[in-house]
Length: 375
Image (cartoon, rainbow, N blue to C red; front, side):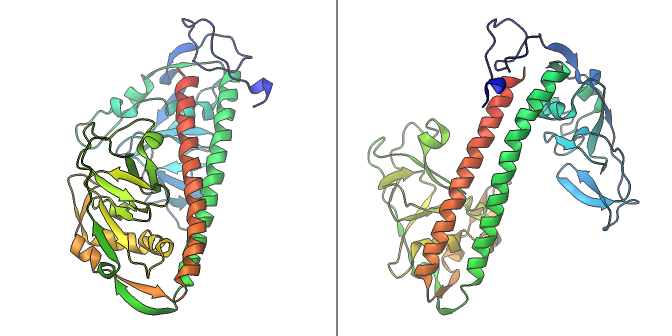
């Protein structure tokens, strides 16, 4: 970062400024309410104006839901959900339409809309929920929310800084999208197969458990890979008593029966030995199968769909209980050149995992900076 963009900590801790600040600004921030800087507006029904060939986007709380040739507003604006998803801010910098579940705003003069967008990420919208059922906000509650903000020049500087971070995030997401499409293309090129085989014939369950506490490193399995728990979470989140945890060795496969449909299945390529929660399933892979090819197949979108079909809804929306017997009956087409395919897929997966980790770190950094650069 250039000297002009250097961020500093305030010398006077009682001074009403954020923890981190650009050095050229010294004024105290102002106590206001959101209603002092914007006016909340209601969205409208899209039924009469929606058209597939429209040039303007129609937004709901989940994002773009259609197109129209009409717009509600053609200036910069910030939006937040009225009902349903109430904790996802929106930034509009082109003419737009929102439906009645999504508020939009008219920004008052001497305020920078993009700064207000980032300010919205620092507000705990769920605490402002006005309903015991579907989460809801009201314009009154939003406009009376207390805020602390700087003058316009500093607003612009902060907004530009976070815009740079968001552009880096967008670049990573774009690269990930390209790699995933390339990976799908590799799958499409594997149709020449010599045999079919069920998972039960190539996977052998392993059930070795720890005999004493902290016997080996605790690992965490996620949809993007297998990690050391302390490195991934920066602290241990597992139970203090980990006797009876399952031991996993290098080259073995593991997955979560509750979250398999979300892609929580991984090959242990990095740890000689570790331990995971007893809820995981661990398998040895038959020597006739290339493990890199297999894990890529097992994490493919087609397989994730199959897992969902053979899993029953659990106590939460995320958890689905896998029917293990049906899982083991799943049949794979074994390609003649699985080793070459496996090498290619492994290379792609390494790049995807590296970018995914970079994306997580960048998003975490953004949230940390939001907490430290706003009051």
